[in-house]
Structures are given as structure tokens and as C-alpha cells.
Length: 410
Length: 104
View 1 (spheres, one colour):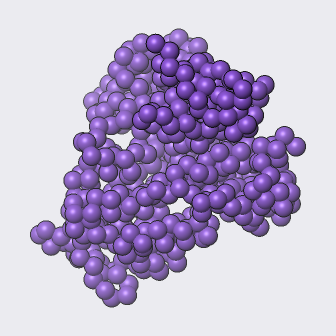
View 2 (spheres, helix red, strand yellow):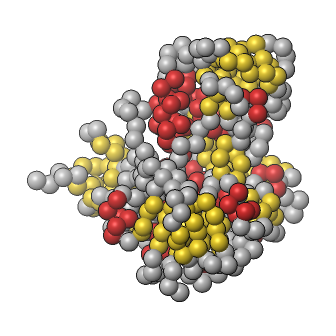
View 3 (cartoon, rainbow over the protein chains, first blue to last red):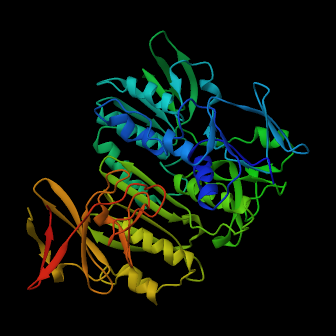
């Protein structure tokens, strides 16, 4: 080995991978290539704290300049990789510069899915970068009319943030309820009610018929025939993995860059991790999934680094997600759609956890909601039970007097 | 100048658990280890100011309830990403069933 390690994509996953290479003793060249101007930063606050903080926010960086130089990580900002030449083992930047690699990591992430009807509207935006967030934040003014298209995590977090800043908010969701993907109805209902109590208008089973710009605002015609006027419309209808580079270089892709349990692509010297990759989830018998989640990005970045160095450890984590809206905190461990029965545990003060068990009684997921981080401790314990393929007694799961920690010891 | 204050009674915290203690505009986390010793740290995670008392204690580790940053609550040592700044710890003593911490 002499060329070193190259990481394409400087989000959570790529940045963690770069530092993990050093933490695992790698001494050769490490190059991290990102398209944005900032040092790698955390995206989760963009829809939450960065929208509502009183002071003007700055990107929450994952590491400072001094840490990059101390760890000898060559961070190349504002650069797009034009091509990967796998036979020659180098990447080509748009400015023509070539960087050789021994192992390559694709941590290209996912970008907001486009709504074709909104393609020509200058009042319709999406959220991915810090700049996107600042542009949206500037429009969250008292009495501004904000329409959020898509009732998923990002859309609803932005809706809550917009309300906090006094804007009038309408959420348009094509499905029968909000957060259809990954969040059980019982919990989605709590969040739906909380938004409505704040005065947010939520329109479910509602499609978009047309989007027409005026000079200062946009007219959105929905499937009921109503026309909703908005000063700003935010499109939050999911994300698309960034796979073009992988495809162009002949790597296997599906819903994301296809990797094995070691996060290796169809080229053993090229790895992919984070939101861009479709990987087999060991805890569900190798079911292939792609996750758009902060912790997954972090864990896979770290694991990919070890495996680039030859460890070849399988990815075995339990997926974990969270969302904060108003004072409510939602956490999900595992994929709830693996479950066939649900057991509820009440934690007091309105907080509760739903345990999702499969037909064999195995705990496959847990979803919880409460004020602040009220469900965090128990969701974390549930995650450990899920990782162990535990079959806890449903009666004990339901009984809040029984400590989950005691089930872990069993 | 030492300033010892009573945070709680020893039976208010289960073994291998944590509770929040607020005093004079500051927030602390008080821990009871699996081997029945008591410890105290700053109450907020050094990463994003989340109350650590909502997190899980496993052996000598407290895990932040939001982003899984881990600290050794006995030493305050940050155990890796996303936390890189150690947690401040405070001396603790138990007298007649009362847990006292020296807040300085």
C-alpha cells in the first residue's frame, strides 16, 4: 500500500471514517473530499436548533482545523469527484487533479428527492446543506405562510420550527397519515395532535396538482381542488442516494450502492457507507436496507474504516432514529415493520414505548415518545435486547414496574 | 474553599443508575455504580447540552440519551465520537445515608 485512503463525501459518515482510520492505527495518506465549503458538520440540527436558536447559527463542525492537521487528514473542500478510475485506482476531481487510492470509500450520502411539479418554482426549496437551512430560516418570519410538502421527519421538524418562529404552517401529505414510514400509527397520532394543537394544518391523503409561482409567493393546487398560497414551500418527500459516480464506474447499485456485510461494494477495494449504501441488515436475516440516519452514518463510517484496513467485521448494528418536535422526543430502535404484534409500556407523564415482536415472540423493534428524552433510557435497553434476538415475556414488557435492565440480564 | 452540599439520599438512586440534581443554577448528574459507590459529574453532555440523567448507565459508563456519546462517570473521560470533551467530575461522600457533593 502506498497511495493511501480516499473518502468521497465529507458528511457525518465520511468524516468519521477519516478519523477512524487514524484511531485504528493507519499511518498512510488519508484524503477526504467534500463538495461543500465548510469543515464537515452535523446535519441533524439543521431542521431543529439551527432554525429556532436566537443567535445566528453556525455549522456545528464534527472536528476543527487543528484536528484535521493533527491527524494528517487532507480535507479537500468545494470539490466534486468527476470520475473513479478503478483499474488505475485513482479518482479524478473536476479540476483534473488525480488522487490515487489503495482503498476508496464512497460516503456520498443522499439528496432530497425532487418534486417534478416544483422544478421551476423559485419559492420551493429543499433542505440538505447549512446554506439551505439559513435560507429557510430567513423565511420563518411571524405570519409567513409556510407549506411543507411531505409529512416525514424533516418536514415535521421544519413545521415545528416554523411554528416556533411564528409562521403559519400547512403540511401536505400524500399518504393517509404522517410518518407512514417507520413510525407506528399510535405514535404518529400523538405527533399529529401536537402539531394541530399548535395550529398547524395537516392535510393527509392529499396530492399536489400544480405549483404556480407568482412574483412574491406560490400557489399550490391540491387534489381536493383547494389552492394554498405560500410564501415558501419546503419539499420533504424523502431522499435519493447519491450513486451516479458509483454507477458510472461500473459498481453494482440498486436502491443505493450495493455492499456486502463488510460494506464492500462489488469492487473489493471500494467500500460504501452511510445514506448512500444498500446493505444487508444482519439482525433481520440479511434483509437489504438503506438507512438515512445519523447514527448509522457514524457507525458505518467507523466500520468501513476498520474494514478498509482489513478487519472485515460484519455490520451488526440495530437501526436507531430520533426526531424532536416541540417538546416531544421520538426514538425508534429497529425497524417496526418487522413486527407482527405490539406491546405497550407506559412510562408516566404521557410517555410510552411500543415493543414490536415478530411471530416467534422475538423483539424486533421498539418505538417510544415522550417529553424530552423520557424514552431514551428504555429505548437504548430495548435496542440491546433487539441486538441479542431476545424473546422477552410480553407481560413483563408491558409492566413498567419490571425494569428492562432485568430482562437484559435474563 | 470547599462547599459540600447534600444532593440526595443514597436510596434515591438505584445501583447502576443516575439522577439529576440541580443546585444554584447548575445541573449535576449523581451516579450510583454497580458496586455501590457514588459519583458526580456535570449534568449536561459536553456535546449538545443534553441532560445525562436521562441516559443509560452501564458499569462505569454513562451514555448520552440523544447521541450516544459515552463518558466514564468516575473519571469524566469522553469515550469517543461524538463526544471529545471530558466531563467535569466532583468529589462525593456519603454520610448517614446522605450523598454530598463538593461543588467548589
